[in-house]
Image 1 (spheres, one colour):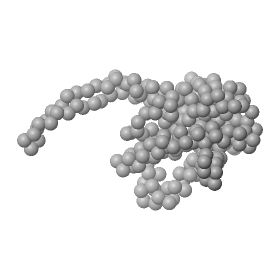
Image 2 (cartoon, one colour):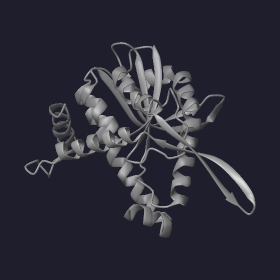
Image 3 (cartoon, helix red, strand yellow):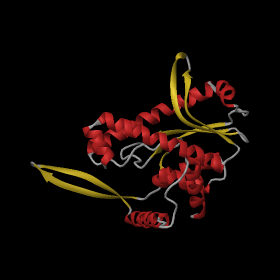
Image 4 (tube, one colour):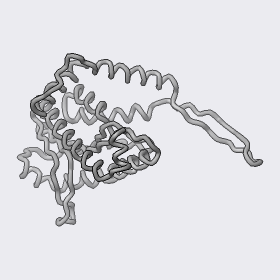
Length: 254
């Protein structure tokens, strides 16, 4: 809420704080991946030349390379909290659309610069599969089309998938399942008509099946309850120590 208000009244300060928060998230994800998949290589905050525009560079967030099988996962980090106004919803949704539109170009840049990546970061494998996800702190979008290949996930989705995934490829697949769940939710349609100014209008109202909403709320409460630990460590000496404690907690809660 405070961050959203800053965005409205002090955008310059909002951008600085958002960048600082993003700087914390990326190292944490990096350490979690290294702990869970020691065979992988994690590259963060790097630049690649744009294909056919060699003087221009593209900034990228997180690249995970599975050296065992050549599966490569790119993570675009968007530090979005839940918006509290229609204008904020519209703005964040537009940023999600831009990110989805930009993702294929980012993957193409990775593909075209693979030899450069291998030289810079001691990567030994060739690409067998190259995928992407968009990571948001909380907000997942309201009026954003679901992309079957590039899922948008939040912190909870990503961490739960990480706890359950035995490989980088499975991490991608588990995050992708979130969108499959949303697309399979039953929709109830109710005909609705009304008269106004001498005209009769015929509409159709759409809503999620209430059974799904009830189950969703139950699951959400369970996640919150399981996450409460009054005895947990609250001060950490390094991001590595915090990542180790967080990963152990995630895996123990499965």
